[in-house]
Image (cartoon, one colour):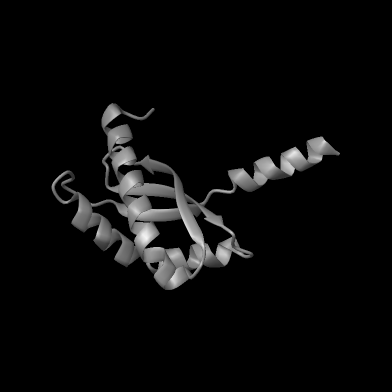
Length: 112
């Protein structure tokens, strides 16, 4: 069960990462939109699992690989933006959130 502090830090990181990815992602991803859907924090607030949704990528796994390669830069930018709110900048682990594609697939199946 998440504590109130974990939820607050997760919301803060989600908001800041959205801004960072909006600015930085076109540099290494090109014309692909990345949105942060879910952030889950560890109890000690040292690790963050970030679920991202990638549009309109033909190969989202390749885009996720690029995001993971640039995670050091993303973590640095996050540290610069939250340095007055957090003592420890968490280690970022990125995962692909395919819930939108799954919902679209279910909707297509229901239409048949």
